[in-house]
Length: 581
Image (cartoon, rainbow, N blue to C red):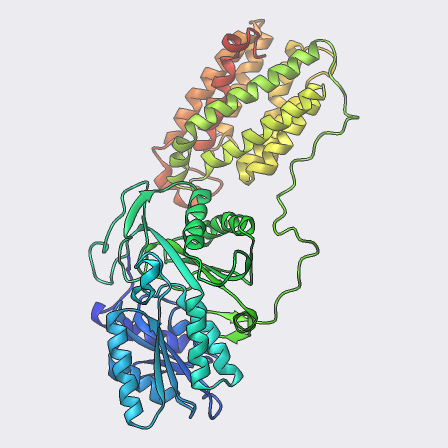
Protein backbone atom coordinates (compact mmCIF):
# COMPACT_ATOMS: atom_id res chain seq x y z
CA UNK A 1 0.00 0.00 0.00
CA UNK A 2 1.23 3.52 -0.83
CA UNK A 3 1.29 5.28 2.54
CA UNK A 4 3.46 8.38 2.17
CA UNK A 5 1.86 11.30 0.37
CA UNK A 6 0.42 14.75 1.00
CA UNK A 7 -2.41 15.45 -1.42
CA UNK A 8 -2.87 12.31 -3.58
CA UNK A 9 -3.70 14.56 -6.52
CA UNK A 10 -0.22 16.12 -6.27
CA UNK A 11 1.67 12.88 -5.63
CA UNK A 12 3.58 13.02 -8.93
CA UNK A 13 4.48 16.71 -8.65
CA UNK A 14 5.73 16.21 -5.11
CA UNK A 15 7.73 13.17 -6.22
CA UNK A 16 9.41 15.11 -9.04
CA UNK A 17 10.36 17.89 -6.64
CA UNK A 18 11.95 15.47 -4.21
CA UNK A 19 13.62 13.42 -6.94
CA UNK A 20 15.25 16.46 -8.53
CA UNK A 21 16.42 17.74 -5.13
CA UNK A 22 17.93 14.36 -4.24
CA UNK A 23 19.75 13.99 -7.59
CA UNK A 24 20.66 17.54 -8.50
CA UNK A 25 23.99 16.35 -9.88
CA UNK A 26 22.18 14.31 -12.52
CA UNK A 27 18.87 16.05 -13.26
CA UNK A 28 16.96 19.29 -13.03
CA UNK A 29 13.21 19.65 -12.97
CA UNK A 30 11.42 21.33 -15.85
CA UNK A 31 7.67 21.66 -16.45
CA UNK A 32 6.50 18.16 -17.32
CA UNK A 33 9.44 16.15 -16.00
CA UNK A 34 13.23 16.26 -15.74
CA UNK A 35 16.23 16.67 -18.04
CA UNK A 36 19.96 16.17 -17.57
CA UNK A 37 21.56 18.63 -15.19
CA UNK A 38 24.21 19.42 -17.80
CA UNK A 39 23.08 20.02 -21.39
CA UNK A 40 24.16 17.48 -23.99
CA UNK A 41 26.70 18.40 -26.62
CA UNK A 42 25.45 20.35 -29.62
CA UNK A 43 23.97 18.20 -32.35
CA UNK A 44 23.22 15.18 -30.16
CA UNK A 45 19.89 13.37 -30.54
CA UNK A 46 17.79 13.89 -27.40
CA UNK A 47 16.37 10.56 -26.25
CA UNK A 48 13.37 11.08 -23.95
CA UNK A 49 11.73 8.30 -21.97
CA UNK A 50 8.23 8.80 -20.74
CA UNK A 51 4.93 7.60 -19.37
CA UNK A 52 2.93 7.71 -16.19
CA UNK A 53 4.66 7.75 -12.82
CA UNK A 54 4.55 4.82 -10.42
CA UNK A 55 7.22 2.86 -12.30
CA UNK A 56 10.44 4.15 -10.72
CA UNK A 57 13.25 3.91 -11.69
CA UNK A 58 11.48 4.02 -15.03
CA UNK A 59 11.36 6.50 -16.42
CA UNK A 60 13.05 9.43 -14.71
CA UNK A 61 15.64 7.34 -12.88
CA UNK A 62 17.60 6.64 -16.06
CA UNK A 63 18.28 10.24 -17.08
CA UNK A 64 21.99 10.96 -17.31
CA UNK A 65 25.12 10.48 -19.46
CA UNK A 66 24.94 7.29 -21.50
CA UNK A 67 21.21 6.96 -21.04
CA UNK A 68 18.21 9.27 -21.50
CA UNK A 69 18.44 13.02 -21.97
CA UNK A 70 15.15 13.61 -20.19
CA UNK A 71 11.95 12.04 -18.96
CA UNK A 72 8.35 13.09 -19.45
CA UNK A 73 6.39 12.22 -16.32
CA UNK A 74 2.62 11.85 -16.12
CA UNK A 75 0.40 11.25 -13.12
CA UNK A 76 0.40 7.75 -11.62
CA UNK A 77 -0.28 5.24 -14.42
CA UNK A 78 -1.49 8.11 -16.65
CA UNK A 79 -0.02 9.22 -19.93
CA UNK A 80 1.62 12.65 -19.72
CA UNK A 81 -0.04 15.32 -21.83
CA UNK A 82 1.34 16.51 -25.13
CA UNK A 83 2.09 19.83 -23.46
CA UNK A 84 4.29 18.12 -20.85
CA UNK A 85 6.09 16.11 -23.52
CA UNK A 86 6.71 19.18 -25.62
CA UNK A 87 8.00 21.14 -22.61
CA UNK A 88 10.58 18.48 -21.73
CA UNK A 89 11.60 18.07 -25.37
CA UNK A 90 12.25 21.79 -25.78
CA UNK A 91 14.42 21.77 -22.63
CA UNK A 92 16.45 18.74 -23.74
CA UNK A 93 16.76 19.34 -27.51
CA UNK A 94 20.35 20.02 -28.61
CA UNK A 95 20.05 20.31 -32.39
CA UNK A 96 20.01 16.64 -33.36
CA UNK A 97 16.30 16.05 -33.04
CA UNK A 98 14.15 14.32 -30.42
CA UNK A 99 13.10 10.69 -30.00
CA UNK A 100 10.26 9.86 -27.58
CA UNK A 101 10.45 6.29 -26.24
CA UNK A 102 7.50 4.82 -24.33
CA UNK A 103 5.37 1.73 -23.92
CA UNK A 104 2.64 0.84 -26.42
CA UNK A 105 -0.40 2.30 -24.65
CA UNK A 106 -3.11 4.30 -26.38
CA UNK A 107 -2.71 7.45 -24.27
CA UNK A 108 1.07 7.48 -24.66
CA UNK A 109 0.87 6.90 -28.42
CA UNK A 110 -1.65 9.72 -28.77
CA UNK A 111 0.03 12.34 -26.59
CA UNK A 112 3.64 11.73 -27.60
CA UNK A 113 2.54 11.60 -31.24
CA UNK A 114 0.79 14.94 -30.89
CA UNK A 115 3.83 16.48 -29.19
CA UNK A 116 6.09 15.21 -31.99
CA UNK A 117 3.85 16.79 -34.64
CA UNK A 118 3.88 20.09 -32.76
CA UNK A 119 7.67 20.02 -32.50
CA UNK A 120 7.97 19.24 -36.20
CA UNK A 121 5.75 22.26 -36.88
CA UNK A 122 8.26 24.35 -34.96
CA UNK A 123 11.17 23.05 -37.01
CA UNK A 124 12.46 20.46 -34.49
CA UNK A 125 12.86 16.95 -35.89
CA UNK A 126 10.87 14.63 -33.61
CA UNK A 127 9.99 10.95 -33.76
CA UNK A 128 8.18 8.44 -31.54
CA UNK A 129 8.73 4.76 -30.87
CA UNK A 130 6.45 2.50 -28.81
CA UNK A 131 7.94 -0.63 -27.21
CA UNK A 132 5.97 -3.88 -27.70
CA UNK A 133 7.75 -6.56 -25.66
CA UNK A 134 4.93 -8.13 -23.60
CA UNK A 135 4.21 -11.55 -25.14
CA UNK A 136 1.11 -12.10 -22.97
CA UNK A 137 -0.79 -9.12 -24.35
CA UNK A 138 -1.18 -10.28 -27.98
CA UNK A 139 -0.24 -13.33 -30.10
CA UNK A 140 3.00 -13.59 -32.04
CA UNK A 141 1.35 -12.63 -35.32
CA UNK A 142 0.05 -9.38 -33.80
CA UNK A 143 3.19 -7.96 -32.17
CA UNK A 144 2.17 -4.39 -33.02
CA UNK A 145 -0.69 -4.76 -30.52
CA UNK A 146 1.56 -5.84 -27.65
CA UNK A 147 2.14 -3.67 -24.58
CA UNK A 148 5.48 -2.32 -23.54
CA UNK A 149 6.63 -3.44 -20.09
CA UNK A 150 10.10 -4.08 -18.61
CA UNK A 151 11.68 -4.87 -21.98
CA UNK A 152 11.50 -1.15 -22.62
CA UNK A 153 14.53 -0.82 -20.36
CA UNK A 154 16.71 -2.67 -22.90
CA UNK A 155 15.31 -0.66 -25.80
CA UNK A 156 15.87 2.61 -23.94
CA UNK A 157 19.44 1.59 -23.06
CA UNK A 158 20.61 0.62 -26.56
CA UNK A 159 18.94 3.57 -28.28
CA UNK A 160 20.37 5.99 -25.73
CA UNK A 161 23.85 4.50 -26.12
CA UNK A 162 23.63 4.92 -29.90
CA UNK A 163 22.68 8.57 -29.45
CA UNK A 164 25.59 9.00 -27.02
CA UNK A 165 27.96 7.65 -29.71
CA UNK A 166 26.74 10.34 -32.10
CA UNK A 167 24.26 8.39 -34.23
CA UNK A 168 21.72 10.37 -36.24
CA UNK A 169 18.03 10.48 -35.35
CA UNK A 170 17.18 7.90 -38.02
CA UNK A 171 19.97 5.61 -36.81
CA UNK A 172 18.80 5.87 -33.20
CA UNK A 173 15.27 4.96 -34.31
CA UNK A 174 16.66 1.98 -36.24
CA UNK A 175 18.46 0.75 -33.11
CA UNK A 176 15.28 1.07 -31.07
CA UNK A 177 13.31 -0.87 -33.68
CA UNK A 178 16.01 -3.54 -33.96
CA UNK A 179 16.22 -4.01 -30.19
CA UNK A 180 12.46 -4.12 -29.78
CA UNK A 181 12.15 -6.78 -32.51
CA UNK A 182 14.54 -9.01 -30.55
CA UNK A 183 13.07 -8.37 -27.07
CA UNK A 184 10.46 -10.47 -25.28
CA UNK A 185 9.04 -10.14 -21.73
CA UNK A 186 6.70 -12.24 -19.60
CA UNK A 187 5.58 -11.25 -16.11
CA UNK A 188 3.61 -12.57 -13.16
CA UNK A 189 1.77 -10.89 -10.29
CA UNK A 190 1.36 -12.22 -6.75
CA UNK A 191 -0.76 -9.30 -5.56
CA UNK A 192 -2.00 -5.94 -6.81
CA UNK A 193 -0.87 -2.39 -6.09
CA UNK A 194 -2.67 0.46 -4.34
CA UNK A 195 -2.84 4.01 -5.69
CA UNK A 196 -1.96 6.89 -3.34
CA UNK A 197 -5.03 7.65 -1.23
CA UNK A 198 -6.92 4.53 -2.33
CA UNK A 199 -8.32 2.15 0.28
CA UNK A 200 -7.91 -1.08 -1.69
CA UNK A 201 -5.56 -2.50 -4.31
CA UNK A 202 -6.48 -2.37 -7.98
CA UNK A 203 -6.78 -6.15 -7.96
CA UNK A 204 -5.98 -9.11 -5.74
CA UNK A 205 -4.59 -12.57 -6.40
CA UNK A 206 -5.89 -15.52 -4.37
CA UNK A 207 -3.51 -17.08 -1.86
CA UNK A 208 -1.27 -19.66 -3.49
CA UNK A 209 -1.98 -18.38 -7.02
CA UNK A 210 -0.28 -16.03 -9.48
CA UNK A 211 -1.51 -13.86 -12.33
CA UNK A 212 0.36 -14.64 -15.55
CA UNK A 213 0.88 -11.82 -18.04
CA UNK A 214 0.55 -8.73 -15.84
CA UNK A 215 0.66 -5.13 -17.00
CA UNK A 216 2.65 -2.38 -15.28
CA UNK A 217 -0.31 -0.06 -14.68
CA UNK A 218 -2.00 -2.19 -12.08
CA UNK A 219 -3.50 -4.57 -14.64
CA UNK A 220 -3.95 -8.14 -13.39
CA UNK A 221 -2.60 -11.09 -15.33
CA UNK A 222 -4.39 -12.40 -18.40
CA UNK A 223 -4.66 -15.84 -16.77
CA UNK A 224 -4.17 -17.47 -13.37
CA UNK A 225 -2.02 -20.39 -12.29
CA UNK A 226 -0.73 -22.11 -9.17
CA UNK A 227 2.15 -20.44 -7.37
CA UNK A 228 4.85 -23.09 -7.11
CA UNK A 229 8.53 -22.90 -6.26
CA UNK A 230 11.08 -20.46 -7.66
CA UNK A 231 12.30 -23.30 -9.87
CA UNK A 232 8.76 -23.80 -11.21
CA UNK A 233 8.37 -20.09 -11.95
CA UNK A 234 11.76 -19.86 -13.66
CA UNK A 235 10.84 -22.77 -15.89
CA UNK A 236 7.48 -21.20 -16.81
CA UNK A 237 9.01 -17.80 -17.62
CA UNK A 238 11.93 -19.13 -19.66
CA UNK A 239 9.80 -21.67 -21.50
CA UNK A 240 7.22 -19.03 -22.36
CA UNK A 241 9.83 -16.63 -23.71
CA UNK A 242 11.67 -19.26 -25.75
CA UNK A 243 8.39 -20.33 -27.32
CA UNK A 244 8.08 -16.75 -28.63
CA UNK A 245 11.70 -16.51 -29.78
CA UNK A 246 12.11 -13.83 -32.48
CA UNK A 247 12.59 -15.08 -36.03
CA UNK A 248 16.16 -15.27 -37.26
CA UNK A 249 17.96 -15.28 -33.89
CA UNK A 250 18.86 -18.98 -33.83
CA UNK A 251 18.57 -21.51 -31.05
CA UNK A 252 21.52 -20.26 -29.05
CA UNK A 253 23.42 -17.04 -28.57
CA UNK A 254 24.00 -14.15 -26.26
CA UNK A 255 21.11 -12.37 -24.55
CA UNK A 256 20.57 -9.28 -22.47
CA UNK A 257 18.47 -10.37 -19.50
CA UNK A 258 16.37 -8.31 -17.09
CA UNK A 259 14.79 -10.02 -14.07
CA UNK A 260 12.61 -7.20 -12.85
CA UNK A 261 10.85 -6.72 -9.52
CA UNK A 262 7.50 -4.92 -9.63
CA UNK A 263 7.82 -3.11 -6.30
CA UNK A 264 7.12 -5.50 -3.42
CA UNK A 265 9.13 -8.57 -4.43
CA UNK A 266 12.34 -8.43 -2.41
CA UNK A 267 15.79 -8.57 -3.94
CA UNK A 268 16.60 -11.76 -2.03
CA UNK A 269 13.61 -13.44 -3.69
CA UNK A 270 14.71 -12.18 -7.09
CA UNK A 271 18.18 -13.64 -6.59
CA UNK A 272 16.70 -17.01 -5.61
CA UNK A 273 14.69 -16.87 -8.84
CA UNK A 274 17.69 -15.71 -10.86
CA UNK A 275 19.69 -18.77 -9.81
CA UNK A 276 16.99 -20.96 -11.31
CA UNK A 277 16.58 -18.75 -14.41
CA UNK A 278 20.33 -18.83 -15.07
CA UNK A 279 20.30 -22.64 -15.01
CA UNK A 280 17.35 -22.73 -17.41
CA UNK A 281 19.07 -20.35 -19.82
CA UNK A 282 22.27 -22.38 -19.72
CA UNK A 283 20.34 -25.55 -20.53
CA UNK A 284 18.76 -23.72 -23.47
CA UNK A 285 22.20 -22.76 -24.80
CA UNK A 286 21.85 -19.05 -24.05
CA UNK A 287 24.56 -16.87 -22.51
CA UNK A 288 23.39 -13.93 -20.34
CA UNK A 289 25.39 -10.75 -20.97
CA UNK A 290 25.59 -8.42 -17.95
CA UNK A 291 22.19 -9.52 -16.59
CA UNK A 292 20.24 -7.01 -14.54
CA UNK A 293 18.40 -8.33 -11.47
CA UNK A 294 16.41 -5.78 -9.47
CA UNK A 295 13.71 -3.15 -9.69
CA UNK A 296 13.91 -1.40 -13.04
CA UNK A 297 10.28 -0.97 -14.13
CA UNK A 298 7.96 -1.15 -11.12
CA UNK A 299 4.24 -0.75 -10.55
CA UNK A 300 4.08 1.07 -7.20
CA UNK A 301 3.85 -1.68 -4.57
CA UNK A 302 2.78 -4.55 -6.81
CA UNK A 303 4.06 -7.97 -5.76
CA UNK A 304 5.39 -9.66 -8.85
CA UNK A 305 8.23 -9.90 -11.32
CA UNK A 306 8.98 -10.19 -15.01
CA UNK A 307 11.69 -11.74 -17.13
CA UNK A 308 13.01 -10.07 -20.28
CA UNK A 309 15.24 -11.65 -22.92
CA UNK A 310 16.75 -9.56 -25.69
CA UNK A 311 18.75 -11.49 -28.29
CA UNK A 312 21.94 -9.58 -29.02
CA UNK A 313 24.08 -9.18 -32.10
CA UNK A 314 27.48 -7.49 -32.14
CA UNK A 315 26.02 -3.99 -32.39
CA UNK A 316 23.38 -4.43 -29.70
CA UNK A 317 25.84 -6.07 -27.31
CA UNK A 318 28.18 -3.08 -27.63
CA UNK A 319 25.35 -0.68 -26.92
CA UNK A 320 23.97 -2.81 -24.05
CA UNK A 321 27.40 -2.81 -22.39
CA UNK A 322 28.14 0.89 -22.97
CA UNK A 323 28.77 2.99 -19.87
CA UNK A 324 26.02 5.03 -18.23
CA UNK A 325 25.66 7.23 -15.16
CA UNK A 326 22.16 7.96 -13.89
CA UNK A 327 20.45 8.22 -10.48
CA UNK A 328 19.15 4.64 -10.59
CA UNK A 329 21.46 2.85 -13.00
CA UNK A 330 25.15 3.05 -13.68
CA UNK A 331 27.41 0.94 -15.81
CA UNK A 332 31.17 1.03 -16.05
CA UNK A 333 33.64 -1.24 -17.79
CA UNK A 334 32.71 -4.94 -17.55
CA UNK A 335 34.05 -6.63 -14.42
CA UNK A 336 36.94 -9.05 -14.58
CA UNK A 337 35.85 -12.53 -15.70
CA UNK A 338 35.77 -15.29 -13.08
CA UNK A 339 38.83 -17.46 -12.62
CA UNK A 340 37.00 -20.39 -14.19
CA UNK A 341 33.64 -21.09 -15.78
CA UNK A 342 31.90 -21.88 -12.51
CA UNK A 343 29.14 -19.29 -12.19
CA UNK A 344 28.08 -20.16 -8.68
CA UNK A 345 30.07 -22.09 -6.13
CA UNK A 346 27.91 -23.82 -3.54
CA UNK A 347 28.66 -23.19 0.10
CA UNK A 348 31.16 -25.63 1.52
CA UNK A 349 29.62 -28.53 3.37
CA UNK A 350 30.36 -28.82 7.07
CA UNK A 351 33.77 -30.33 7.54
CA UNK A 352 33.69 -34.10 7.77
CA UNK A 353 35.40 -35.49 10.88
CA UNK A 354 38.89 -36.79 10.28
CA UNK A 355 39.21 -40.56 10.00
CA UNK A 356 41.81 -40.34 12.73
CA UNK A 357 39.16 -39.34 15.26
CA UNK A 358 38.48 -41.94 17.94
CA UNK A 359 36.33 -44.80 16.71
CA UNK A 360 33.49 -46.32 18.71
CA UNK A 361 33.85 -49.76 20.19
CA UNK A 362 31.65 -52.06 22.18
CA UNK A 363 28.59 -50.48 23.73
CA UNK A 364 29.70 -47.04 22.51
CA UNK A 365 28.51 -48.06 19.05
CA UNK A 366 24.99 -48.35 20.46
CA UNK A 367 25.32 -44.93 22.08
CA UNK A 368 26.35 -43.44 18.73
CA UNK A 369 23.38 -45.14 17.08
CA UNK A 370 21.02 -43.76 19.72
CA UNK A 371 22.43 -40.27 19.10
CA UNK A 372 21.50 -40.62 15.42
CA UNK A 373 18.00 -41.79 16.37
CA UNK A 374 17.66 -38.83 18.73
CA UNK A 375 18.57 -36.39 15.97
CA UNK A 376 16.03 -38.03 13.66
CA UNK A 377 13.36 -37.57 16.32
CA UNK A 378 14.45 -33.95 16.70
CA UNK A 379 14.26 -33.44 12.94
CA UNK A 380 10.72 -34.82 12.78
CA UNK A 381 9.36 -32.65 15.57
CA UNK A 382 11.10 -29.48 14.43
CA UNK A 383 9.79 -29.81 10.89
CA UNK A 384 6.34 -30.51 12.30
CA UNK A 385 6.42 -27.41 14.50
CA UNK A 386 8.38 -25.08 12.19
CA UNK A 387 5.50 -22.75 11.34
CA UNK A 388 4.33 -22.50 14.95
CA UNK A 389 7.86 -21.72 16.11
CA UNK A 390 8.15 -19.05 13.42
CA UNK A 391 4.92 -17.43 14.60
CA UNK A 392 6.15 -17.40 18.20
CA UNK A 393 9.39 -15.80 17.08
CA UNK A 394 7.61 -13.19 14.96
CA UNK A 395 5.78 -11.77 17.98
CA UNK A 396 8.88 -9.87 19.08
CA UNK A 397 11.62 -11.13 16.77
CA UNK A 398 12.31 -11.82 13.12
CA UNK A 399 10.20 -14.96 12.69
CA UNK A 400 13.01 -17.21 11.48
CA UNK A 401 13.38 -19.56 14.46
CA UNK A 402 11.47 -22.45 12.92
CA UNK A 403 13.35 -22.26 9.61
CA UNK A 404 16.68 -21.93 11.35
CA UNK A 405 16.06 -24.92 13.62
CA UNK A 406 15.06 -27.06 10.62
CA UNK A 407 18.20 -26.12 8.72
CA UNK A 408 20.32 -26.83 11.77
CA UNK A 409 18.86 -30.21 12.64
CA UNK A 410 18.92 -31.38 9.00
CA UNK A 411 22.63 -30.58 8.74
CA UNK A 412 23.35 -32.11 12.16
CA UNK A 413 21.58 -35.35 11.28
CA UNK A 414 23.42 -35.66 7.97
CA UNK A 415 26.76 -35.13 9.71
CA UNK A 416 25.88 -37.62 12.45
CA UNK A 417 24.88 -40.26 9.91
CA UNK A 418 28.19 -39.86 8.09
CA UNK A 419 30.07 -40.11 11.38
CA UNK A 420 28.12 -43.22 12.37
CA UNK A 421 28.99 -44.85 9.04
CA UNK A 422 32.64 -44.13 9.82
CA UNK A 423 32.12 -45.75 13.28
CA UNK A 424 33.24 -42.62 15.09
CA UNK A 425 32.90 -42.44 18.86
CA UNK A 426 29.92 -40.55 20.38
CA UNK A 427 32.08 -37.52 21.16
CA UNK A 428 33.26 -37.16 17.56
CA UNK A 429 29.77 -37.86 16.20
CA UNK A 430 28.11 -35.21 18.37
CA UNK A 431 30.93 -32.75 17.70
CA UNK A 432 30.36 -33.16 13.97
CA UNK A 433 26.61 -32.78 14.45
CA UNK A 434 27.07 -29.68 16.59
CA UNK A 435 29.45 -28.05 14.14
CA UNK A 436 27.08 -28.76 11.25
CA UNK A 437 24.10 -27.38 13.17
CA UNK A 438 25.94 -24.16 13.99
CA UNK A 439 27.26 -23.74 10.45
CA UNK A 440 23.95 -24.23 8.66
CA UNK A 441 21.47 -22.67 11.11
CA UNK A 442 23.49 -19.59 11.95
CA UNK A 443 22.16 -17.09 14.45
CA UNK A 444 22.09 -17.38 18.21
CA UNK A 445 20.17 -20.64 18.36
CA UNK A 446 22.50 -22.31 15.87
CA UNK A 447 25.57 -21.40 17.88
CA UNK A 448 24.01 -22.52 21.18
CA UNK A 449 22.81 -25.86 19.87
CA UNK A 450 26.25 -26.38 18.32
CA UNK A 451 28.19 -25.92 21.55
CA UNK A 452 25.56 -27.84 23.50
CA UNK A 453 25.86 -30.95 21.33
CA UNK A 454 29.66 -30.74 21.43
CA UNK A 455 29.62 -30.50 25.23
CA UNK A 456 27.35 -33.54 25.56
CA UNK A 457 29.63 -35.57 23.32
CA UNK A 458 32.77 -34.54 25.18
CA UNK A 459 31.34 -35.98 28.42
CA UNK A 460 30.66 -39.43 26.93
CA UNK A 461 33.21 -42.28 26.90
CA UNK A 462 34.51 -43.63 23.59
CA UNK A 463 34.64 -47.32 24.48
CA UNK A 464 31.53 -48.05 26.53
CA UNK A 465 28.09 -46.89 27.49
CA UNK A 466 28.07 -43.90 29.87
CA UNK A 467 27.47 -44.35 33.55
CA UNK A 468 24.92 -42.45 35.60
CA UNK A 469 27.40 -39.80 36.72
CA UNK A 470 28.63 -39.31 33.16
CA UNK A 471 25.05 -38.77 31.96
CA UNK A 472 24.48 -36.20 34.68
CA UNK A 473 27.77 -34.55 33.78
CA UNK A 474 26.82 -34.43 30.07
CA UNK A 475 23.64 -32.49 30.85
CA UNK A 476 25.51 -30.14 33.18
CA UNK A 477 28.29 -29.56 30.63
CA UNK A 478 25.74 -28.70 27.94
CA UNK A 479 24.15 -26.12 30.26
CA UNK A 480 27.56 -24.64 31.12
CA UNK A 481 28.56 -24.40 27.46
CA UNK A 482 25.30 -22.71 26.49
CA UNK A 483 25.29 -20.18 29.32
CA UNK A 484 28.98 -19.40 28.91
CA UNK A 485 28.57 -18.66 25.22
CA UNK A 486 25.25 -16.84 25.34
CA UNK A 487 25.45 -15.21 28.75
CA UNK A 488 21.79 -15.91 29.52
CA UNK A 489 20.41 -16.69 32.95
CA UNK A 490 17.14 -18.14 34.19
CA UNK A 491 14.48 -15.45 33.80
CA UNK A 492 15.97 -13.87 30.66
CA UNK A 493 13.35 -15.64 28.50
CA UNK A 494 15.64 -17.86 26.45
CA UNK A 495 16.16 -21.59 26.01
CA UNK A 496 18.17 -21.48 29.27
CA UNK A 497 14.84 -21.21 31.11
CA UNK A 498 14.02 -24.74 29.92
CA UNK A 499 17.54 -26.17 29.82
CA UNK A 500 18.39 -25.30 33.43
CA UNK A 501 15.47 -27.13 35.11
CA UNK A 502 15.99 -30.06 32.76
CA UNK A 503 19.69 -30.46 33.58
CA UNK A 504 19.06 -29.98 37.30
CA UNK A 505 16.16 -32.43 37.48
CA UNK A 506 17.97 -35.02 35.36
CA UNK A 507 21.07 -34.97 37.55
CA UNK A 508 18.96 -35.08 40.72
CA UNK A 509 16.98 -38.08 39.45
CA UNK A 510 20.08 -40.00 38.41
CA UNK A 511 21.88 -39.38 41.69
CA UNK A 512 18.79 -40.47 43.65
CA UNK A 513 19.02 -43.92 42.08
CA UNK A 514 16.04 -43.63 39.71
CA UNK A 515 16.32 -45.48 36.39
CA UNK A 516 17.81 -43.26 33.72
CA UNK A 517 14.67 -43.31 31.59
CA UNK A 518 12.52 -42.23 34.55
CA UNK A 519 14.97 -39.50 35.51
CA UNK A 520 14.91 -38.28 31.92
CA UNK A 521 11.11 -38.32 31.66
CA UNK A 522 10.80 -36.36 34.90
CA UNK A 523 13.36 -33.82 33.69
CA UNK A 524 11.53 -33.41 30.38
CA UNK A 525 8.31 -32.64 32.24
CA UNK A 526 10.16 -29.91 34.16
CA UNK A 527 11.49 -28.46 30.89
CA UNK A 528 8.05 -28.38 29.26
CA UNK A 529 6.52 -26.61 32.25
CA UNK A 530 9.36 -24.10 32.36
CA UNK A 531 9.03 -23.43 28.63
CA UNK A 532 5.30 -22.74 29.00
CA UNK A 533 5.99 -20.44 31.95
CA UNK A 534 8.26 -18.25 29.84
CA UNK A 535 5.05 -16.70 28.49
CA UNK A 536 4.90 -14.54 31.59
CA UNK A 537 8.47 -13.28 31.26
CA UNK A 538 9.84 -10.16 29.60
CA UNK A 539 12.93 -10.85 27.44
CA UNK A 540 16.15 -9.32 28.76
CA UNK A 541 18.47 -10.48 25.98
CA UNK A 542 18.46 -10.85 22.21
CA UNK A 543 16.34 -9.40 19.42
CA UNK A 544 13.13 -9.69 21.42
CA UNK A 545 14.34 -7.30 24.12
CA UNK A 546 13.41 -4.03 22.33
CA UNK A 547 9.83 -5.34 21.98
CA UNK A 548 9.72 -6.89 25.44
CA UNK A 549 6.17 -5.84 26.27
CA UNK A 550 4.84 -7.38 23.07
CA UNK A 551 6.47 -10.68 24.03
CA UNK A 552 4.62 -10.98 27.34
CA UNK A 553 1.94 -13.65 27.02
CA UNK A 554 3.85 -15.65 24.40
CA UNK A 555 6.30 -18.44 25.34
CA UNK A 556 9.89 -18.14 24.21
CA UNK A 557 10.46 -19.96 20.89
CA UNK A 558 13.92 -21.18 21.92
CA UNK A 559 12.67 -22.71 25.15
CA UNK A 560 9.66 -24.16 23.33
CA UNK A 561 11.72 -25.84 20.62
CA UNK A 562 14.13 -27.26 23.19
CA UNK A 563 11.26 -28.74 25.19
CA UNK A 564 9.76 -30.20 22.02
CA UNK A 565 13.06 -31.88 21.08
CA UNK A 566 13.58 -33.27 24.59
CA UNK A 567 10.05 -34.66 24.53
CA UNK A 568 10.57 -36.28 21.13
CA UNK A 569 13.77 -37.95 22.32
CA UNK A 570 11.84 -39.40 25.26
CA UNK A 571 9.77 -41.45 22.79
CA UNK A 572 12.77 -43.31 21.44
CA UNK A 573 12.12 -46.35 23.65
CA UNK A 574 8.92 -46.99 21.67
CA UNK A 575 10.57 -46.56 18.27
CA UNK A 576 13.96 -48.19 18.87
CA UNK A 577 13.42 -50.56 21.77
CA UNK A 578 16.27 -48.91 23.67
CA UNK A 579 16.47 -46.30 26.39
CA UNK A 580 17.25 -42.83 25.02
CA UNK A 581 19.74 -42.34 27.86
